[in-house]
Image (cartoon, rainbow, N blue to C red; front, top):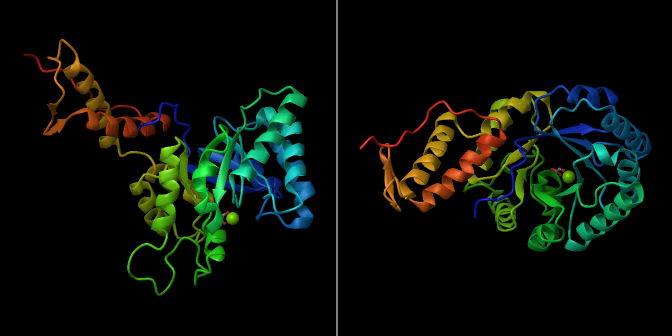
Length: 321
Ligand code: GLV
Ligand code: MG
């Protein structure tokens, strides 16, 4: 089913280490759809207390435009999660769109975050439930429990593949994150994981996001790998470097001609099914036949295009006789 929710664009999700104030400042000017200020794996254990302060200051200083502002907290198996959540949400909750919870293994972990968020929102007078949750799927248990994770809270907005941790968790024989493991030459080693994440996301009306590509100088490699996920239907991908942002935005946006065609199908279908258009269930648009299923496919492309701010360059007009 196409989503009834307005789409929040997450084509490019920029990782910014919370321990680096210079990177935090620079991220404000980059054209990423989402930024996530990291308190987890990009921050050394001893730097976490200062990173929380940097992240709070960066959120409260503003200047993020219409980017989605996300903070990645540490996972529940560490000793840091509760302080990450309390400090960031108490001090900058009004400037925060979502928390990202890494290494999610069960619905209970999402519910625990939901409960803590609700208590903080009530305490400091924030709207209860406005702050969303993005769940990172980074190990075998998380993937097996993904359907429960997806439904664990109405706050869940996105399911994210964490390839580096995932590769470690399943003992994959490779050190190059995002590329195929050497010796696997019969397909895409990540296909099953990505499809499972995508199915859970679509079943529960969430977004599905691909993780990082660590060869940051190889923008062509990024494009190739991102293009595969976009072709499957994922909504976006992490970017680790300014050089990957434009590529992600382009790869996860519809092509202009597809966007125009989708909008034309929607207009044409509305007209043909109306009394004036003859109440037809199927009709021709250009060289192709359209019907109700075409309308659903067009809704997906037009939703992504509209969320990305695309403009029409072509307009369908009803036949004159
Ligand atoms: C991201 O967190 C990853 O583990 O790939
Ligand atoms: Mg990870």
